[in-house]
Image (tube, rainbow, N blue to C red):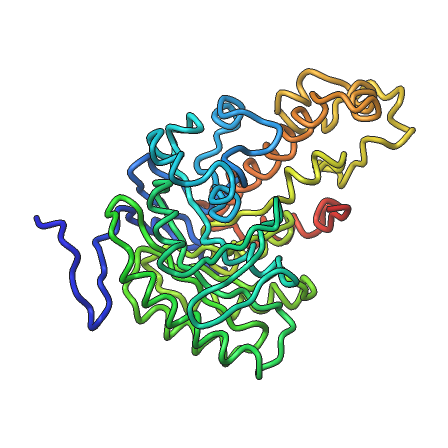
Length: 389
């Protein structure tokens, strides 16, 4: 069988190196159980993907991630482009080899980081011109350049370059932005040449249902291995985000993976799984861990609080992670207060274990057609609304 790209109108579409297998849909919700087959292994969905911004999930090593049964991690195009540079990574064998991670990887396009640099960037039809947060140097990131960087890094899944508008943007801003993102997707597909990297398109639209529906139609008119929802959890209330995802996710193709970018809290995850989302990423578990905010079956725990100074109990008696099996709250508090580096590792191990175990439990609930019950029980738990990110 030929591996040559096929033509769809004026867009060059390569056969996807990833393949999604939809195994089961929960009987009473939109929750989906699936498998995403990639060149570096199979991913059981729904899945949470730890974020490795600069080629490393902060505070933990690849062997920690393997022990946690992390199936896929993220790399960040913007940060890796600036340091150490994609060319160096490519010369050293690609990102998998560079960071000693043999399992699947996804890279974002850099679009969200451009969004976050609002005061240091300018967006035009060509792309985004911005100043590096490291040294102030000027850079230009275009759809073609984003794809070039991601293909050089060699991720299994790469993302189309898009503009990520603030969620509360007015229609007058969103409509030209969405049209530009659609045009940028055409340019991304034309630049996409590495068959082992699979390109996902990104749907935007803010909180306007008609714009979301329209953009789904435009983005999904291009046959791609998967599709993502962008522009959520960027300023709106959680209830608005949940409603927007519940409306938009079912509009995406049923036979392709659905990825909700940059989301979110445990409650966000279980709610949006119920809407039919398959893939999630967020810095929340790792960032919270480094700041001493820990997710437990009994609610959020702030380890620096004085009440834990003599507490001999594990962090979470219901948790089986290395941190909870081995150390007391008193010791974990001591490490955090003393600013010992190992505190970040132990806290991060726990929070990632919490997130990954939550997704494993969600997969089991979907398989047994009891996801509605699972979601209702989770919402009743005190952990459902953490704070302190």
